[in-house]
Length: 215
Ligand SMILES: [Zn+2]
Image (cartoon, rainbow, N blue to C red; front, side):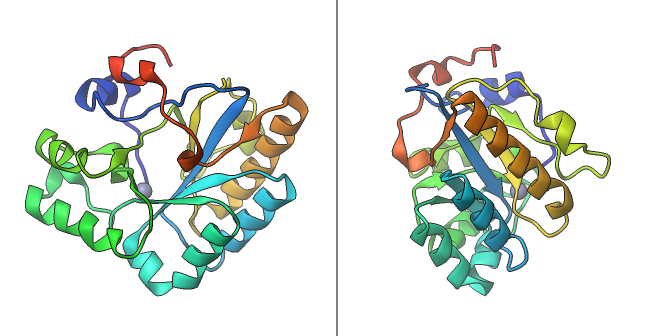
């Protein structure tokens, strides 16, 4: 589960990471962390397919190892995958070598050159090593679907702008909140004319590197 840090702090700490995409048309970028999972991934894929939406799944290596057919199903449906580490370590509490090894272990199981640090917690040393190999993808908005009191109908009305990168979770623990949220968001995007694309389809915004406090 990902506990959010303030975006202004993350942008300062990770100046070359991607927090938003260049808004070419009315595009948004849904991302799902912590999967794949046999209970939730097929349901997420089914909902995305219903709305002809593409997304990016930041998979855990340990889950991809258990369920390689789900990683294949994600890619076969035209979505992208990204590395979310093997075992979801907290970078602040993990030595650099151990942390990098964990990411490398996942890279053999999860295709794609994208990496999202678990909890958004990564030290400057870990970041400097990984940014040469991966495009580090953070987020514009993280939905708190991991929190028990989370109300999907309220969250689905959040301010969303073209180019936004949105975080939801692909996890059994959050499914009761994530799946209704996803359905509501996609319904809304359809009405408002937003197109959901995967992150390998577009370049990051040039403005994302400037550490801007504006979301
Ligand atoms: Zn995570």
